Length: 246
Image (cartoon, rainbow, N blue to C red):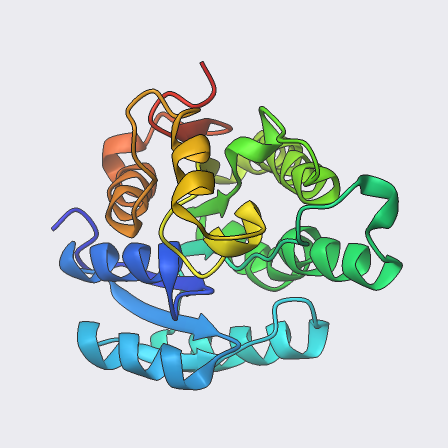
């Protein structure tokens, strides 16, 4: 019960890594807001863990502002913010990615961190405490070919994490990131381009531990970094990747 009495918002928590983080937070005692563009998926996870669901498009300022208002009304205070929602473009040469694809990737993966910070950081500063966790990727540390602009968006998130950590440390707010390798989530097929046994085997051959990341892996790492067990840790990008970045 490391998060007993804490309140948390997890974006993109209707499926995949976000759902794994939401489940682990609830198991550790937190009250969790399951925020997702897919309201039906968010509702299902919220019912499962005894949390509340809220719709959000993290790329839109009005939607993020509405989420912040509703979450604060429901919880009174937000102790933990997890920026997990993310998308990618399909594998292709960098010059073939359309402008619309590029804009969407950076709106969801990068601009969202700015938008949530604008809404939640002032309140965390006022309370003198808080933990923010950004779900980055090994793609931001060891880029894969043909995912160029997705790689860049996650590299941006890693730099943003460190910059936020330095600025917010004097206010008692910690900011960290986790860097998963690809996992059994809705994005897996998009990363690989095509989901076949051969492509899976090739992908797995780059991961020393020989398996994909799981939502449970992400939940375990996130719960640690957002708990008092990690009270002296800020600005860290924790690789939860089975050795992919070695």
